[in-house]
Length: 373
Image (cartoon, rainbow, N blue to C red; front, side, top):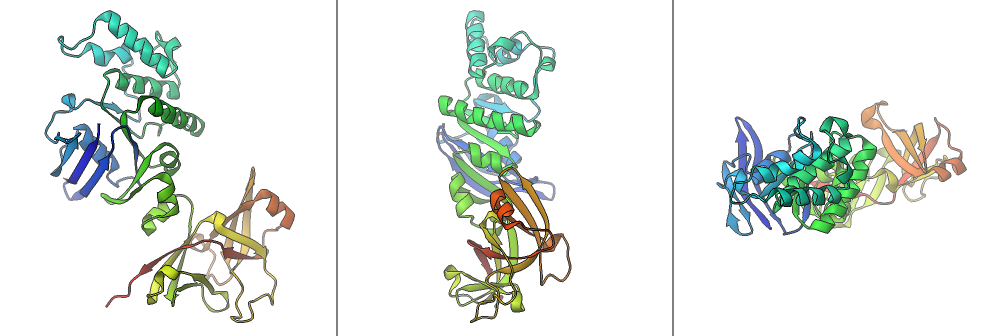
């Protein structure tokens, strides 16, 4: 079932939860609504489900307007963050619940219900827990049972609100892989809400980045990672270093004086002395020791940002470096630059805290703020 969201607005008192949101979701697609708390992603999910009504706009399922259709008639399955299982019912009874409360004319026979429930429990790989109660299950098992219960009524749309948010990191990672495999098998149109960028990028076919009640960018995980449409998207997807500077003739200059570094920015060649923001991911720095007198002869500047190593954290194959620029007015959180290099390179260089290094950006994304006329 395809879903069309057209010009949806929603306000709670003075708070604008959604501002003119439009979005198309293809049949059988798995889409992530990603963004910080308060960005409107859960409100949008609840409007799609029929649990909230938009102030303006419409929701269409396969071309039919369902904006005013009751939640019971939308054929939507919903999975919440905190499982919402009935504690007094066994696993089997929980999964069977949606089938047993159907109108008599649509209700399957007990034999059909039993067959369907065991089929679903096998699908989520928990058939052996049919007689247990929710309190006897782990968090990951409870969430899989909640998903089986949502699937029991054969929904045309599956909606998941932070489905793995209450679980520890290891279980979350396992369930992400499992959800992706399950979706590839069932092809139910699915939308899940998350604030975890790793989760969205790993699981979804497409990612919808939301901020302040609006859609910032829509694209495949690779597209939003490689081609962020705005500073917000760049900053939200993974760790990033932000540098302030100015654009001059297709180059952005960050830093000042002898510490200034020029980065090519051909896409902004028409900008004249405009305020610029350059984003560099930690793994996009080349790291070398700084040797006084190694400045480029034509500029008198180092080939990169001169910074002092304040801390190194080596975990597994990666060394994470925290550095303070030499031209920083004072050491503080805002001045810290984060860089990542292979742990093997860190050991080969035998770097010590307190040493002065040169960071050369291999890749940077520049956004320009046009000067006020």
